[in-house]
Amino acid sequence: MKLFDVFTKKAPNKVFIAILLGAVAGIAYSLLIPLVLKALEPTLGGLATDSDKLQVFGWVISSAKFAIAFCILCGLIFITRSLSQVLLTHIALEVTTEMRKDMYYRIRKAPIFSLEKVGSAKLIAALTTDVQRIVMGARVLPDLLTNGVTLLGMMIFLFYLNSDVFFFVAYCILFGVVTYQLPMYVSRIYITRSRKHVDHLQEGIRGIIQGAKELKLNKAKSDDYFDHALYQQERQILASDKIAQSVLRVAVNYGDILSFMVIGMISFVFVNYHQVSSSELIGVVMVLLYIAGPVSVILNSIPQIAIAKVSVRKVNALLNTLPEETCIEHVQAIDSWHQIRFDKVNFQYTAHDDSPGFKVGPLSFEIQKGEIVFIIGGNGSGKSTLSKLITLHYQPSEGDIYFGNTKVTEETLASCREELTAIYSDYHLFKRLFGLKVEPERIQLLLAALDLTDKVNVVDNAFSTTSLSDGQRKRLALLVSVLEDKHLYLFDEWAADQDPEFKNVFYTEILPQLKAENKAVVVISHDDRYFKVADKIIRMEQGLLSMQQPVTTVPSTSPELAELNG
Image: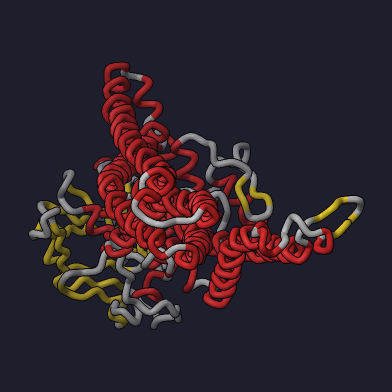
């Protein structure tokens, strides 16, 4: 993705028209000074001849023809430049939206493993910071064109006035452009450095919001976190931005003063070695004063473009780490199944240096419908990886997964995912029942069964609040999961935040009820007192199955919780 491509890909015709209008405005700008100089020439009688005067609304206007042409040019500049900028503003707003929507799509299509590897801080920084910087940088490109055309036109007129002065000014511009690159190079280094720290700062901001409770309980921890994760990053960003912006300001002022230095050199030095008439010198000085504006605009635009280029590289690098899943999006019903089968499934992590990391597998086992399976094991044993393999968020490096006779492939992956639902330990509770249309009576029964009637209402398919205790939020997530009515349910430490009473309800009533509905139920748990509820226990150790053990189950179902699955 190149900077100007951001605009041209969105609306090439509108961009072309905007550029054309900008070029016309630039040409018109470049004609103003020659027109004024021509009107002031005594040989044309500009200010000395009464016959060339015009009276309008009591105002006496000299050099009427030139005055009319001047007004026409001013009107043309106003119209063409305004239209150009309005078109580009509209395109910029559309591009900003489209770029964010494209990022949404890439996140949606990216494998979960890639999203976890990138991290939410970088994604949020790209969406909120880089997209805006890219668009702002692209928006100045047409202004560069307008002022570039103006500069070119004035240089042509300067050549017409005096070729020696033209070559001298051209050499000065070339010298200025070359020497201007050095501070710009230094500035880009610090802009890039600042942008790297923005990612760390986003992570720190997320931590202060999500970890506010923990930080308030430990002053030393809070002070250290603020200093290391926030203030240190702010200091790094501030220091880098100060140097970058200082160098940029010095560079811009250097460009501005260079224009006046050129005027001084021509007025006080150049005229001593070259023949320049007074009228030519006046015209040259007016031209140089006039082009100081376009030169200033061009130089002021370069920093914004430099910042945008840094963001372009960041977004490109980010998108390169977010490959699209190769599965077919179309969802269709798969053949009826009674078991999920893992056949020598392996999953291989990669380290930061792309060397092989932790490996899970080979795993071979079955999960039956109408069966409760517990997955147990210590931290780092591979439970979470196995859970994501079961829910098809991770794809096996080797081996196959079957839903009955349907093998999980690129063609069937999306369809097989429709068969299951999961509540992970780091679940997200959405505020609306997205994708669901449920009778209010059904929702009220579930709210009552989960002891949430006095806490939450559902209005227009949205929860009245999600500001609940952790346990209540998980119960609300369970309500959504039940409403989805899938064939496989996975619960990752769901009962960890529940009080003893509802924890008992979950294990001895909700899980058996799901089993009675012929659902396949997978539970990651450390609650060994409830292991008897399981039909099968799978123990993970160092990425391998160390045990598959059937367990005698004595289910217990209350009438109240029987409403969970209608």
